[in-house]
Image (cartoon, rainbow, N blue to C red):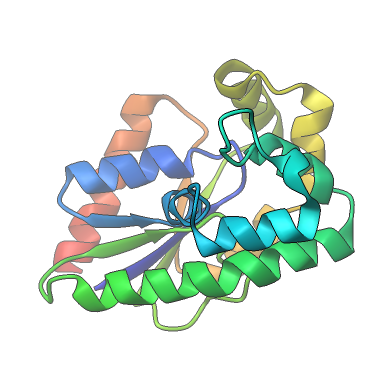
Length: 195
């Protein structure tokens, strides 16, 4: 079974992925794939340096993800250029990992931009993790040190929860405690196993 997992920044999507993994799912994380693709010496990093200059590197020669995000966040052409470098590589690596997954495994593809990139085909289910905007802002301040305005700007750059509700066939409303979220994930996991 193949599950697409999505949710906006600060929604708790990564926590849901972790809980599903604890229950036996094989989680493929698009962000982890992205980080691996830009390790020093990798072709994607070389192409990004060519596109944006050496200023995107730390003194250790590692890509400064925050610096790249700052460069592309309000520049559609730069964002499109970065996405043109990264998205095909992420898709290829994801396809490889999906092919290699054991047949009897629930595979969860954790991708924040599942809807934005149009990667909606080939999933048995799409799960969207939703949470109220103010709660997401508070989480981002607590976990990432992000200011409220930056959090709002990041949220505006993603599709809204209405679009996620329309796309997903399973919704997890993460507006309570961690214990409540675990209960919700248990219900979803049981339905995936026996539904």
